[in-house]
Length: 96
Image 1: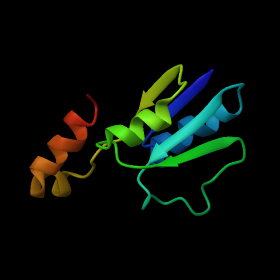
Image 2 (image 1 turned 180 degrees about the vertical axis):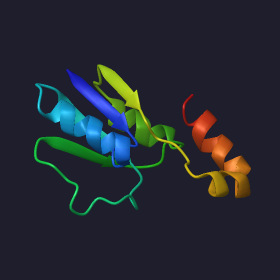
Image 3 (image 1 turned 90 degrees about the vertical axis):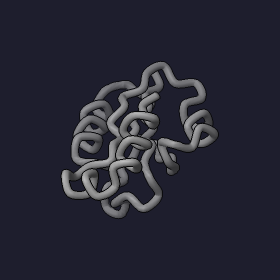
């Protein structure tokens, strides 16, 4: 079973990918290229970098997927209050 984890390099995404990696899943982590990748890459996990708002990147990453665990989000109270439209773009439209 191929599982895609969006936001897979975040706190929850790292924990989920580690748990699934111990099973028999084909895991692909999808996250921003500027995410904290160094030191977090694990054998047996595929990494795909792009924006949750980039439909082409998503379609490429999701090809052949059986399941998606959507964890990508624009986080932080101050950050989302300061950049409300960006928060809406990522957290609402990115989920669509």
